[in-house]
Length: 149
Image 1 (tube, rainbow, N blue to C red):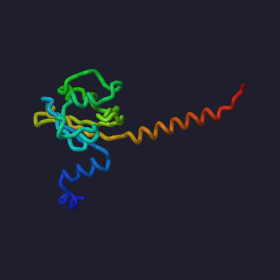
Image 2 (cartoon, helix red, strand yellow):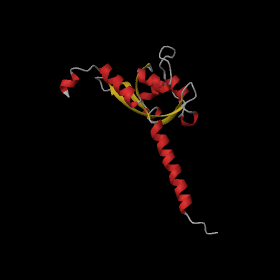
Image 3 (cartoon, rainbow, N blue to C red):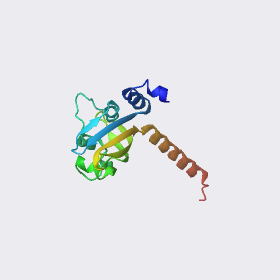
């Protein structure tokens, strides 16, 4: 692997991961300034030339039933659960997608929070599969129970 690392740049690896796994990466500093990778823009269905990365923009895309309490982006450092976990987003074209987001707070040399780093994965296909399996199981259970009337 060490030989491979010498030939790959971080941007090559990030592009491959984002494209093949349906992922995106984002970063938010202590002042609330965000940066998004191309893959994160793609997950949200947004044009990187038309939208500026912001916590407000993410909140706008989260399905209303999945939104937590309204808080500022600086609170991400304190309460990672604001964007950690599974939630639905609504893309500008109306498409509903399931996202699984994992975050980590990175500390500076003094041990204080410097930024939060997040990775988001599109898990829509897995969610649809689970829903189909549940529906099939419920239908099977209903058919397997004999009618005693």
